[in-house]
Every structure is written in C-alpha cells, then in structure tokens.
Image (cartoon, rainbow, N blue to C red):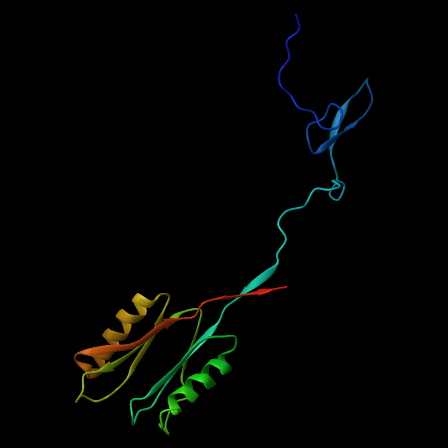
Length: 160
C-alpha cells in the first residue's frame, strides 16, 4: 500500500512561484523571476491620490461679521473665499484670515457687552478645536462664550 501527502506542485516537482532546475541526478527549484508570471498581477495599482484641503476664516473687528471656506486645494483660494464671504454682509475691515490645512477650526464670540474679541482655534478634530476656542475666549475676557462656527477640512480623491 502506498500513502502520500496532499502536496500541490506547480512547475513539475516545484512549489508555486518556482520552476525546476537541474536534472534527475541533481534536481532543484528556483524562484520564477519578476515579470515571468504571465497573467499574474504584481499587486494593487493606484487609481488616484488623496489631496489634503485648506480652510480659512476671516473676521471683521468692527461688525463681528465672519466668513469661512473649506475644502479648497490652495491656501490662497481658501483665504480669498473666506474674506469675500465676510465682506458679503457689508463689513469693510475683514481680515485676510486664519488658514488651516487638514485640520478642524472653531470660532467663538464673547458674551455681548464685553470686549468683542473673536477667538479662533484649530486642532486635529472638531471637539478639541471647540474646547480650545472656548478656553481661549474666556482667557481673552469673554466670560460666557458661544461657538458660532466649527468645521473640518476633508481630503479629496483625485483619480489619475
């Protein structure tokens, strides 16, 4: 009686990915060279890439108006849109703005009747940015502060 194991051999007597070398007196196996596997892929192929985006906030010191932009591919595009949105409501002194990339931002206003200083903070996530801006606003003499804006930039996939 003859018993054998369940061994699968690809090229003759060799395991998958190898080919036989030598002869019956000195048999052996060698790896199939790269490019020699017709029909087999070398792994995943990229179909595009992720682009990190910019956001910006622009504020007016005299009116308290603010404008924001998010998801822009350049810093200048984000800053320009934020300033234009701030000016849309009539403010003439909108700042060039606060720009951020691949982050979150929060904007807080102090309680009415106080110094009116607007606080801005950025962080890795919206909750942290919000906590930080409230703390900054209170340190700036804002007493009770209100978060009026919080958002995050998100990456954009660009196909090749």
